[in-house]
Amino acid sequence: MPLQNRVTPSGDIIATPHRGLFTGNRGIIHDPATKTLLKKRWSTPTWITCVCEFRGWRRKVMGGRSWTELFFLDEATAFAAGHRPCFFCRRADANRFRAAWEQGNGVAKVLARDMDAVLHRERLDRGRKRLHPLPMPVRQLPEGAMVEAGDESYLIVQGRALQWSPAGYREVECAIEHAMLLTPPSTLRALAAGYRPVLHPSASP
Image 1 (cartoon, rainbow, N blue to C red):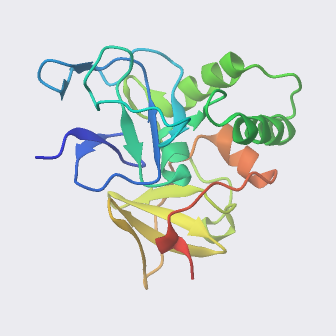
Image 2 (cartoon, helix red, strand yellow):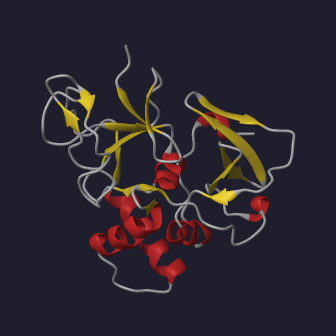
C-alpha cells in the first residue's frame, strides 16, 4: 500500500506507487507511528525540493520526526506546488535559481527566507492552492511553467502543452482553454529569466 506522500502540481498530497525524480518537505506533517499525514499540510513556510540521493544517506520514509518526506514527478511539478530548490543538498541549483529569481523579480541579495515569504503568499489562499491569472497566452509561457484547466494540470515545454499524471506527461490534441497559472508568479519570472527546471523524461519530444 503506497504512502500518501506524492505532491501534485496543485499542491495536494496523494498516494501513488510512483515516486518521481525529487523529494522534499514542508516540515513535519505526519505521524511516524502510523506513517499517515496529519490534518495540516505544512508546518513551515520553507517548502524545499531535494535530491533523492545525497552522500549515501538512508532514511526510512515517514519513519521519524525530523521532516516528512514528500516526492515530486519532477522539478516543474515541485515549482507549481510552491517549492524551491534546497540550499543544502542542491546548493548549485539553489544558487542558480536565486540568481534567476533576483533577475526576474528585479531584486538583489535575496535570502532564502525572503523567497520563502514571497512564495508562501503566492502559493496559498486561505490554506488552499492559489491560482493566478495568466500573464501571457499559455503556449508563450516559459519552459517549465504549469497551468490548470478543467481540473487537469499541464506543463509547457517548447510551446507544447503536456498533461500531467503521477506517472508522467502525455501530449494533448485540444487547445487549453480558461487556464490559470499554477506556478507562483515569482517562480515564473525566474523561469523567464533563464532557470531551466529538471523535467521528467516523458516531457521530451
